[in-house]
Each structure stands twice: as C-alpha cells, then as structure tokens.
Amino acid sequence: MYLETIDSPRDLKGMGVAELEALAAEVRDALMARARTHGGHLGPNLGVVELTVALHRVFDSPTDTIVFDVSHQTYAHKMLTGRKEAFLDPAHYDDVSGFSSPSESEHDPFVLGHTSTSVGLAAGISRGRAMAGTEGHVVAVIGDGSLSGGEAFEGLDVAGELCDDLVVVVNDNAMSIAENHGSLYEELRRLREAGGDVERNFFTDLGFSYRYVEDGNSVAPLVSALEAARDASGPQVVHVHTEKGHGYGPAVDDPETFHNVGPLEGGAHGAAPLAWSDVTTGYLNRRMAADPSTMTVVAATPTGLGFTPAMRTAAGRQFVDVGIAEATALTFSVGLASAGMRPVVCLYSTFLGRAYDQVVQELGVNRAHAVLMVDRGSVYSMTDATHLGLGDIAMLGAIPHVTYLAPATVPEFEAMMDWALDTCDGPVAVKVPGGAPMENALPDVVRGSRVAIVGAGTFYPCALEAARIVRERSGIEPTVLNPRVVSDVDPELAAFLAEGHDAVITLEDGFADGGFGQKVAAALAPLGVAVVVRGFPKDVPDRYDPDTLVEQARMTPELVAEDALAALGAAAERRAAR
Image (cartoon, rainbow, N blue to C red):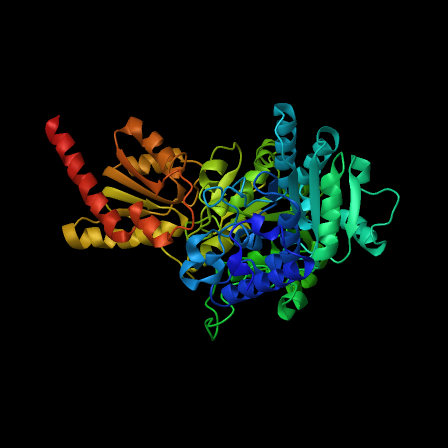
C-alpha cells in the first residue's frame, strides 16, 4: 500500500511513474469505498486522481499554492495532504468537508464552493508574491464547466497581463454538472480534436503559453507537461483532457447522475416521497407545454433543480441552460421578457448573490416581468458553509420593486407562480419551501387575540402547531398568520397585528438579521407592540444538523409556544408597571 505511507506531498517526490500510477489506483479505490457508504462528489473526483497526483509530484505545496476551482474535486488532494484517514477509515469519513478548507490544512488556501474564482484568486496571489518578492509557484485548477462563468474569463484576462508566474490547468472532461453550454466549448472541442496543435486559440489570444495533454488520466504525460509549465516564463495554460468518473463504468456512462451521489449501497427502496423538485418541475413543465411563451432558464444546475435530460428535451427551446453564469441568466431573462416571453429563472439560494446586481438593476430598476424562483433557500437544504441558503430573504427584501413571496404549501406555490406569470406585470421572486412538500391547503389566518404568531413559508405549519400548544396550556387562542409576502410589510398587516395583540412572534426560514421579522418589528414599534423575531443567526455554520439549528433558533412548536406565553407575561408586566 502506497497511500497509507503518504503523510504529505513531500512523500511523492522520490516515487517513479509506476509507483505514482499505483498510488493513483489506491486513491481511486478509496474514493469508491467511501462513496459506497457515504456518497459525495464522485464523478469529478474520479476524473482528477492522476492529475492531482501529478500536481503534487511536480509542485511543492504549500510553498507552491494550488487553488482548485469550486474545490468539490479535492478529495484526492486531501488524501495526499495529511487527511487520508478521512477516506480510509469509515469512523473518520465526516472529519473533512467536501470542499477545500484552510481550517483543515495549510494546503488549502481558501474556503471555496462557488465556481469560476480560481484563476482570479491565483492571479492575485501571483501578483502579490511578485510585489512582495516571495518565492513559490501558483497553480489554478479549473474545470471546463467553470470556464463558462464570467469571473473565469475576467481572471484569465487579468492574469494574461499581470502574472508572470502562474499556471492555469484546464481540466477538460467535456462536462459541467450536466452538459456544457456556450460557444466556448466548440473552441475546446476544436483543440481536443487537433490534439492542441493549433497556431492560435482562446488562451494564447489572452497572453498564455499553451500545452495540451490528451491522456489526462495518465500520470507520465501530466508530469511532463506540468514540469514544462512550471519551468517556463510567463503565464501558462495546461489543457488536460480527462474523463469524468474515470475508472467507474456507471459514472463514465452517466456522468450527470454520478456528479454528486448519496451512498451507492444500502439506499432506500420503493417509491421516493414527493420532493419540492417534483413540484417545481411538474409546474414548469405543465406551463411550458400549455404556453409557448413560458420559458425556464437555469445556470448549470438542471439536475439539482429536478430537470432530467428527458424533461429538457421535451421542453426544447423553451428550456435554456446558460452555463455557470447566474448573472447572465438574469439579464438574458430580462431580455426575454422585453421580447414578450414569460421567463422563470431558477437559481439556488446560495448562488443568488452571484446575480445580485442584476436583480437590483436589470430586474428591479427596469421592473421587468420576469419571475425568479429561488430553490434550496432553507435550513433544510444544503448544509456546507459554502452552500448555505439562509440569506435570500434579507437579500431580496432590500431590493426596490421586487416582491418576494414565500409559499407554505404546494397549492400556494402554484397559485403564486400563476399570479407572478399571468397577473403581476413586474418582477416577482418565489421562495421554494424547505422540508417535505405539504400537498393540502392551510388556512391563511386563524383569528385569535392577545398574541400573534406569524409563520413565513416553511415555518407556517410550525406556527399553527405552536398556537395549538398555547391554546391547550393557557386557553388563549393565538392569531396565526401566513404573511405570504416576505419582502415588505403592508400597513394593513401591521394595523391588523397591532389591533388586539400584546405580542407578535415571527418565524422565517433564513437569517433573522435583515429579514422579514425585523421589518415586522420596525412596523409595529411605533404602534407599541412587542415583537419576538425568530430566524437563524447571521453566521456560517458548516455541515450543521438542521434540527439542531432549528432548536437553537427556538423555532420548534414547543419553544415557539413557550416564547408566546413568555411574551404575554412580559406584556402584562409592562402594563402593570405603567
């Protein structure tokens, strides 16, 4: 066993090619063993095993800095940089995150989870070292899918002018999460078909020297090309043709499905329960079939949103994937709307910030009739620090002219989407709830007195259950309200909450700071009503347990009921003290 003897990249320096290939085989075996019971980003990591081995054979991390774009392909890198137990011992599988993390190792320069940033980061390091006179090479490893992001082009544009000691490794497996989209990929295909032997190309026109490695899953040619790039002057591109899922037949045959997987063995059998992706794709597919003007626009995450290849084919030209380019997804959709189309832009909450300026300017300032569907914006969604979906209410709530709706049930979601597309003539965003879809309708308001519990979206059922507990314990019938709109507080809503209520509790699926509850508190403060705002701390939890975070935020029915009774007691004390 070679892998068991590797404690740092220095241990690779004396190994020959045959030993490095054997090490790569062991790394791949460890990836497969872990995926069988743990899951994770399987396809991307299987494809870069040899590349990662070659990188650490040629460069001297951490003196030389290696920046992996997105960093979901760093499993082999972690094995070779002192974290092999997290891949060899099931008891330690959860010791490391699925992305790079400086808190884990000095070999990880940044926390990375969003795409297209590696070249810009590496260019900054390269330029900074040149300014400071610091030694060390800088390498950016970026996949072909990530090249479709505007920041990747911007990084290349800057690096081609400013960086004399930068190597950009383009890991080209002809795939993003799903298939690639954009004319850039015709250029990469042309280079692959020519074996890299062309006089000029996209990279050389930006000021880079260019090398091509056809067999990117073989250590020897990778080492040779990387050594040549390391020892050359000026910015370098090493274009490496790899195979996503290499070494595991099912992942090679279906790289989209095996991009990110649950445990390969021991999964649940039988019919899968209804998921929100079933609801959202079902709605959009029906709309597109019935209305040729309805279009769905995504930014390289069709599978995660539930759009299977068959669905995409059936939708035809009404389904557009712009690649990893969230900002362009928004601007493109505003253009569609101006041409008479009815676009729905589907983005994960965590990627919403990548298009924030476009939501403000193109969508909001222009009051464009486009719909933004925000998915995975919930405590019950992705839990990695790099992919949190807790900031969208605060973000969208700060943008003029954009109405943000938070449905609690399936019928409410569908009604809101119909209203946004057919009735409203301005920009609307709809927040897909977290947890299991609730297929039955719920009352919009339960009229009571003294205390009101306002539960937005995901947490409206919690509000109803908390009210039941309050009623059983005290005989008081709380008012329960589903606000529906979380971007603003209507004056009529504020007046309703102030009338006959001594206290109000708000619940929302997002950060409390800057969220809907604070808007309610600001609206009710002049009216003398105390508001208890419940949401999540403005923090970056990593791989958290959702139920634990909900309990810590006091948003379980039991704790909400406790807080409602305590708020009533405090209100009574204030009255007695007057």
